[in-house]
Image: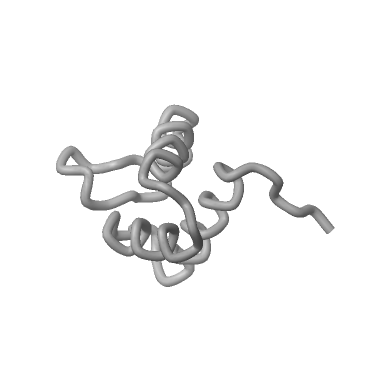
Length: 69
């Protein structure tokens, strides 16, 4: 079984879990879930930016939601 090893991988997996209810996830929910697991705001932002560059998801202009492509 594959186990995520980097903080970015683990944050991505948490965001995927939040998206099970739909394609769009509120940024507030992402921050709440990830910080409760011990991740920093910098790590969360790094993950969001990395996967946005890979076109896995899009962040709205106000940076309040993440939508999977």
